[in-house]
Length: 144
Image (cartoon, rainbow, N blue to C red; front, side):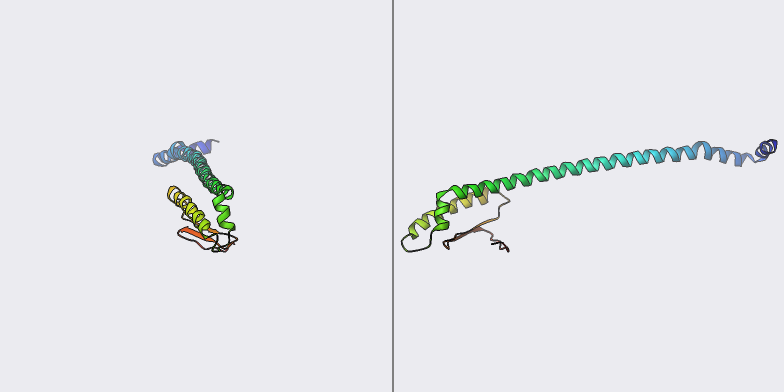
């Protein structure tokens, strides 16, 4: 045991001070820094997750609101007599006046919807009788 103690006493003061500095300053600083960094990373990760969940919930609510508005427009069109008669009528010389009246009323409704709702760019109707009506920037898709 004495040989270890005497060996330590025989080491230069410079080496002793470096060893003490490493043991008392550097190692504790590294350990504390690692713990703080780990905790900080956990907190930032949780804040990021919370922020993303909040943003996604907001987007979901906005999309749900827009889908509900489109469903309301569709429901209105189903129950409105002008729409039904326009979509079911076949263009014959006898009913062209009624088709024109229905078309005028529908165009007014469409114009209001396109102007008041920025997310609606166009509306297209195609009836079983062959009547068609398009307003806005028409978009063609694969759906029938």
